[in-house]
Amino acid sequence: MLSRWLIHKVRTSTLYNKFHLIEIDEQTKMDKDMKSYLCKLLLTARIDPKMLLTAAKRVGWKKTESLLVHPSLPAKPLKRRGDFGEILTNAILVELMGYIIPVQKLRFTISPEQSLAGTDTIAIKKGKGYFSEMCFVESKLRTANDSYSCHAAVEGYEQLKKDYLEKAPDMIQFILARLHDRGDPLFNDFLKYLNNRQDLTDIDRFRLGLVWDHEKWKEEVLQSLEDEVDVESIPKMVVQRVRVQKLASQVKDLFDSIGVDVITDDQEN
Image (cartoon, rainbow, N blue to C red; front, side):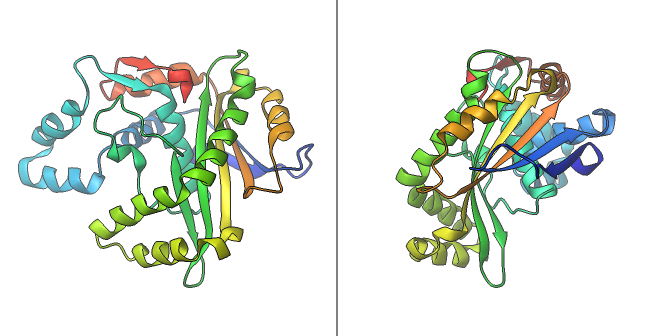
């Protein structure tokens, strides 16, 4: 579905030597069908669609909506704008890049305004009988042109590096527990990865998802990142840069459509 709206390419001629750069831009305007699809992604990012379907079959959709969807919002509905950046980054990984995201982190927050600490997402690519890539993903969304924007990518990189060095085993164990709970066959692959991780770090990758308002994007964001990346001591990194026209108003419209009328920036994730 996203391929109808977005087009991606690898920038082959680049000034940046410390990371690969994938540029993603709109090839058409965000039409009614795409907005409906993105609203669905916003809802299912926090609620398992299989659970919604099961509940709807048993008590009907209207009852399910009143029981499961709206109560997940506080009295004054509140969401972080940065959540959209994380959700879009993940959807691009799955739909356009061929990754699998075994655990949707946002589904394990207790309330909509809560933000779980640590790296946003772990995504994988399957190889022959094992992973060909284990990808640690952090997203940043910006709708303004301010001093923070130029350093947002560096901040995302620092978060990835810190979590990778200090929390990677804990993050993998969290996924292991969720996979075990649901009897997922990926459990054995993750267990093998965790057991042999010191010998398998060549499959580890960092991915930085940058979701920007089209008019606010500046190359300084990447120039600052190039100055900071340490290619000797961390996994190889890919930057996934997305530009969307009128991003702030588009995100507001999407949240409005699912009943969220108060949005926080929270440094825009």
